[in-house]
Image 1: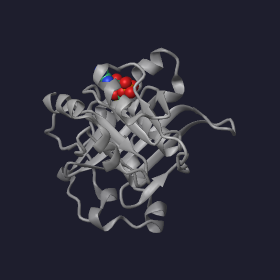
Image 2: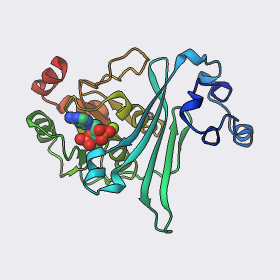
Image 3: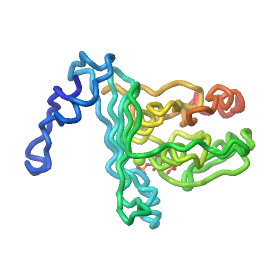
Length: 241
Ligand SMILES: Nc1ncnc2c1ncn2[C@@H]1O[C@H](COP(=O)(O)O)[C@@H](O)[C@H]1OP(=O)(O)O
Ligand SMILES: [Mg+2]
């Protein structure tokens, strides 16, 4: 079980009181571990951390788009993730929120909302666009394009019903940008792949860049339909990267 794993931590790198090595027994008594994760070996698990996703948003003061991403991959696949939004302002006045997802189990920390059924909304990069990114967007003919930074934040927009799809036909994202967002989105019934419909692999030996772009769709939206509208020229460009 995940809770029994004892990951190797550089203990001298962080103060002792930052480390929580006990499992939460109260939680574990209430919730069953999904069967597929029952017999994990430590060597099957790779954890991808992006301590500050949305760097350019952070430097320009778009603080709500900044997230901390922790993605857990098991045997190459993104399986669980945490998206923490340190500057999120809740109506109650609370600052910060933590959203998590575990495939086969669900999501927590957010009440997902479906996007509107009468309009097609796409979210994409604000600061890393180019001609190919734009031609993928044009081909989808969305009613509105939301241009915001951060891979974590864009997946939160999908879960909040603000967009149907996250479309980024460029090689800029890295494995630490997408592991947690993919797991959280898919735990909620969505799909996140490259621009050719392939899931990224997150094993310990993979290359860091997500060379073939990012395509995320929310639960209830056909990933295949959107993929079929992406022009071959975009797919070819993504293959060559
Ligand atoms: N061309 C790029 N160079 C470096 N990082 C990129 C690039 N494109 C995307 N990213 C990373 O992917 C995330 C999502 O992209 P975008 O904000 O453009 O939508 C960014 O927050 C950034 O992560 P980070 O902010 O951690 O450097
Ligand atoms: Mg990042």
